[in-house]
Image (tube, rainbow over all chains, first blue to last red; front, side):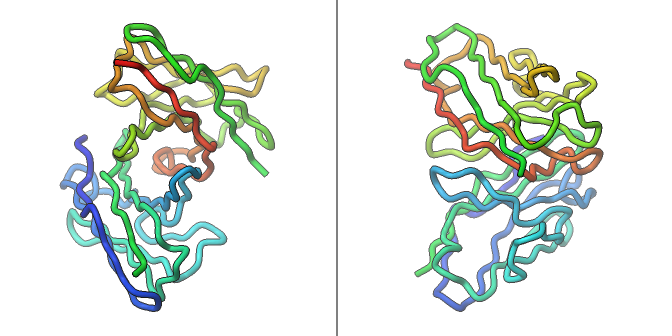
Length: 108
Length: 122
């Protein structure tokens, strides 16, 4: 499996929505529903935000949502808040786990 | 509350073997419900999954590192370990241990340690 492709950066103003894409192939994202998203504040442990494309673990605000179309998965953060500024990583599981390169989300 | 804590040398010489241990509290690595894995992040780069182990001792490693990575577990100590052989400066990274689920959730890491920086000088 090759690394998934994410845009290096994304930004939005407080209250706005931003969507981060994650592109894989028909061998991973396109075929399986096992796409996850992690939020990573530097110096801290990554935090699971979305799993199985669109499921939220307990405690994750419903401002975070996930979807998938074809070989591309997406994470949407609605109602941006300053604390959402972080790096976001997608991952896919197809027998082994592969991560995306990460997207730095800036809240303007 | 499940907690994971990485430990090990912060500096490893080139060509030597990197060894890290993850001590688990608030849960048992002997549970049949989870996998226990290692992920790393080189400076300025993204996350990379290294390998995972099931309580039975069954392991699954990243194919790109397969021959260099060994993940093992000691259920009596409730800890699992990573060994990465023949390290180079490219192995400098923050190393995380984490817990994932089973089946399709084997690639979903619900709990993470805080990470430990390992430096391999060039």
